[in-house]
Amino acid sequence: MINASLTQLASALAAKQISSVELTQLFLDRITQHNPSLNAIVSTQPERTLAEARAADARIAAGEAGPLTGIPLAHKDIFCAEGWASTCGSKMLADFVAPYDAHIVTRLKQAGMVTLGRCNMDEFAMGSSNETSHFGAVRNPWNTQCVPGGSSGGSAAAVAARLTPAATGTDTGGSIRQPAALCGLTGIKPTYGVVSRYGMIAYASSLDQGGPMAKSAEDCAMMLNAMAGFDERDSTSLQRPAEDYCAQLQQPLKGLRVGLPKEFFAEGMDADVRACVDTALAQLRELGATTVEVSLPNSGLSVPAYYVIAPAEASSNLSRFDGVRYGYRAPEYSDLNDLYCKSRAQGFGAEVKRRILMGTYVLSHGYYDAYYLKAQKIRRLIARDFANAFEQCDVIAGPTSPSVAFALGEKSADPVQMYLSDIYTISTNLAGLPGMSVPCGFSPSGLPVGLQLIGPWFAEARLLQCGHQYQLATDWHTRQPEAFAG
Ligand code: GLN
Image 1 (cartoon, rainbow, N blue to C red):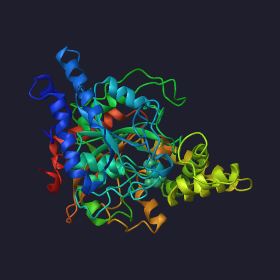
Image 2: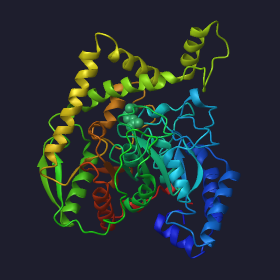
Image 3: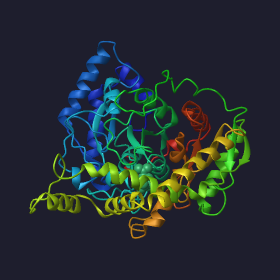
Image 4: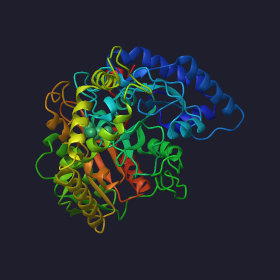
């Protein structure tokens, strides 16, 4: 059961081979057994979870089940969920119990999914290794001396170790795709605006996008069917006809044009990653795709532009944490100003403070034109590069991350090295495009490698089709870390 796909779980539930309560208990037990060595899950509420499972069983018995009814999942701790501590990995929100559900939490609940618990994450989703969490680092199930990636590292580690069949994540600059790659999973960041940001604690609002993380493209497609859709409470939510992300999965890849950006295949990518990505591209060609070289000339500017724009937005978004309305308040202060200063100084971690400082700086008078405005112009150029490239191809392929999972502590003293973990993923967010990572092999040290697929706006179904067809021909996505097999 722990390796079953969502489709297999749905059939087992429909055939009454297992009840949702039994399935949920199985995963709750696995969390109890394995989470202490991973720190992937930060909170559970077994009573509440089992009540949801009983309600799902009743729905199944009444013949009112949908494709996800009764299947458990875990949410990244960035999504507000009524009655759940929703901490965003921060001391600032360590005691914050959300009074309402994020849009996607509501949607997945309506679909009948059962919440197992909440996934650890980098503080306010700032990080690429899950080491900035107030609740401690998460460990990679493939090698517990290594990071799982970030910021959705808890979600990734939990799915990889089979503590949950699927999880939610968010991606501002790579936080779904990079941890998916480092943990051997499939994860998709949809087109900006496809999934509502309502109730998703804001980091950089023009870049943030929620999405599913699971074992396969097919599982992600099923989840996205429930998560996507217009929501009037998010002003950037897109009003489009509903789409079935599973509809295209079975179509063969014959004739698909895959663009390979020459900038992605220049220096910077580790040889182990390169070898797996090259093999995956050969496999796509065997499946009937053709490859063509394309160019994204401004992609080298994506990391610097992102580290102006994202901190700028973060400095504004995080100003709401003032110790007055909700969140952490310093126990002692002399006046209102002191209350603000002490609450923020004590409530935020070092990386978050660094971003707030950078963001405030680039937005300040005299620097706005020099940094923020220039970064916005580069953002437009990056989007235009993609539009040009997509005249020659249907999807773009390349590595998700320049390296496999690195050791805990290896990059934490060097923010720039850490920021470069997202060198291949960030441009997608700047352009608002959908991007996906699928497992495509292992390094000689036994760590997973991810293949990234990027599409034009609204090409989620095509990306998922590519991933699914590739997964029909390969078995990387079925591998499981041995230490967590039993
Ligand atoms: N690692 C990037 C950052 O720290 C991206 C994080 C994300 O996508 N949330 O900002």
